Length: 83
Image (cartoon, rainbow, N blue to C red):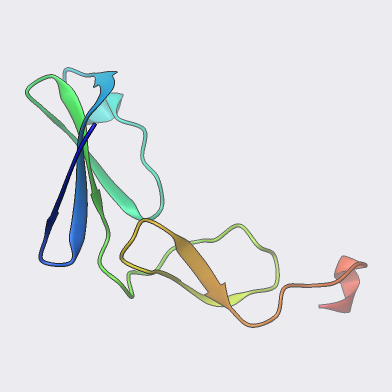
């Protein structure tokens, strides 16, 4: 795997996923995945890009520029109806 950083974005190239077009590259919330030279190429979304972190009660979910999607606020405690 090759990692290169440019303009605050980390690009991961050659992760072993073969492709013919972009539809063959699994999409993740904070990464742009494209098919280049028959291999999926991943670029982290810029910090502040809206995303969904999968946590029920968090607000203002956004990418951190490192591939992670994080929501602000306090996640719910059980029971979920407390939100």
